[in-house]
Length: 71
Image (cartoon, rainbow, N blue to C red; front, side):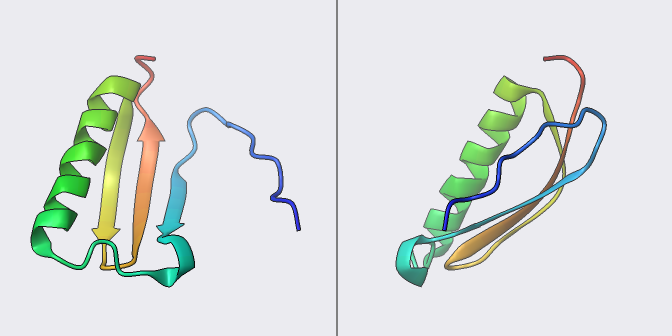
């Protein structure tokens, strides 16, 4: 089944989730999760996002983000 179209609505808070392919445990080690968090904050600076909260587990992540307006 195709995924629904996404629409960007300025000023809204977004809850973004991502699960590893086939529910594999690709972020199993602390060093892997730390690396992912570093990449998140590099993207935050580059793309002008405000990260309100995040959770990184061994096989999925949750993000609460909002645009900062400096794009």
